Image 1 (tube, one colour):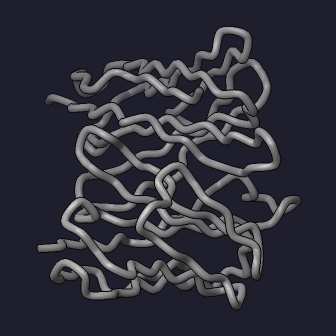
Image 2: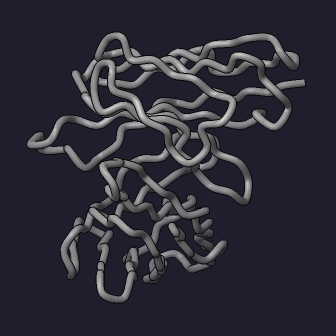
Length: 112
Length: 116
């Protein structure tokens, strides 16, 4: 079956580093995605990984291990505006489908 | 401005009264999708479309219909809405394979639907 797990909530301090983990199970894996969603707004794309390793984009980095079904999003130099929900998603292309499966999201609170 | 638009943004309706939520994108995207977002359940895909006249079910298609008669529009139809379809709905689109942002979904602003 398909399943994505990520922590429900995390809290961190401004200026710190936080790592949000995501584990997944899917039969036709073809990419892992991270989205940011501020309260009351639409999700916005942060990162995409399809091969093992680390992708860095400014203060945000995303890591993937396909053999472990594991990813993390690393946020450095946290700012107050980083307070948001972070959604992990996978693209499943099993049996000719082209579906996206999202986790329930991790709500990050950044404290001053 | 490149964007995905949804209408209406807010809707309160009653059980059984057919409704359509429109979604339009002006980026010539091929892939379009509808999601619902509920507390504790996250984003769940309802239907998606790979291109004109090509649609397929996501994980929660029951009670919904879609059509893709033209590339830019992907309406979501609730033939007989029920209270369990009260939710926040998002439309999203992605560029075709080979485009620089192919792996990015662009989301509309959302439609908050309440079915009484």
